[in-house]
Length: 610
Image (tube, rainbow, N blue to C red; front, side, top):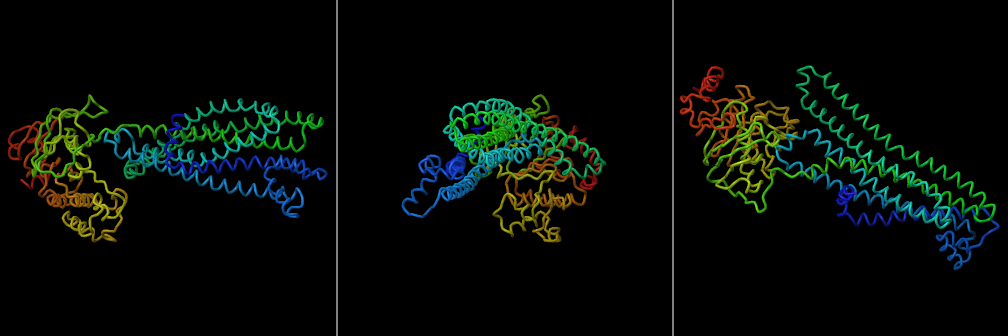
């Protein structure tokens, strides 16, 4: 019930629609009961012309009261009981239909609105999680939760909630009819319900577990699909189409089996109810013969009782099905609530300060860091580094030395486990995240571009930028020439992750995006590592334009890209081993000299620059 209340809490802002729907669905239930009363009148009065006592008609069919009253005021308005009954039937079904339509629309409005709010809250929560969260949760599983899991919840809160209201009020109205007809017989007839409801409740718990398993299998299938499509070039290169096909087939079969198990559990309630209902009807018919023979019950009363009872079993059957759907939704909600309840690793402090401008520099003071998933594994230890405003500081070292990890502490993608990172003397953990990151531009080796136009990718993060500002950024990034050659220029769609562009073109679009942001601090993380010689030359020129009048932390394997840095910091195994200019380090021995000698032989750019 805790999870149910939590789900329904999202519908509370739409209580006027819920309340109105409840009233309208109560009208639907009353209409069902009225139909049964009219059936009694048909059997006892319309099909037996010799009896026309209006007093009894008034008692058994209250809707006809108005018609008979009008007849007494206006002679000839209605001439017989059948005319009154026919008019009442039409009136009841018209009103019931209108109530059902309006109530169904309102409850779906509240349900869809509530689930839309829930989906937005989950997305916003996931979006604001730290880097560790995305390292431990795959893209396919996250997408499955935000789309498929919440779809299950949507079905329960919109469609099924509407049906729940309808069936509950119908059940209540029909119970009144059977009790009013013969309360002793009603109690006997309803004794079979516990034999249905108790097993149904137990089955519901199994359905919740089975549904969660099916949702996990769906997430696994999504993960395989996402990886295979995104990495289709790798799949083709290594000829692993058959391997991926088999992997997908196994996951699809797991999903099929868990889905069929859910269907088997969910469907068992219906035949159970129908069987017990049949047993009840057989017993009632035996009892009715004796009652009718002894004039203790009329044919119409018994017929209306049986019809009411049969109609009553239908909402019971529907409610068990709705219960199972809600159990499925609760199973799906487990992962959703898990994401909602997870505390953000990187959070703003209460009363965080705004970083209005960057003036003095960055100070990394005795910083240590270990990844949350591997506290005993790789980390940074005792890092001390000062980067003055306007300086270009390069981080070099072997792969895995901690260069990118150190740079990621500045924009707070991670927080140091010890020590502090300060900007203009203030700990980055005391600053507003938005104001901190607005002062930092990043160009990484794996450039991410959106499946949008060239202009919108450059404008990303500065939606208010004018077309002229976009073009100026592209010119300074040496990108305008190839952009103009594209079919629609700046309005050309560049494909998913920019796949319609070459590596060098993608990097120059990313540089243009950073230029347009115009942040005073710049982090360049292996921005030229994947490029050919010609592309690298162009990107290097674009980077020089980007680095102008900025404070730069540059990470590079190719030493040719950082020879003119004001300070070169050599990292090894999470510690700083050397610091100095290129000229200082080239003659000191150690890691930097060894890297330089290797690249002097192998790297034509490094060779020519010396």
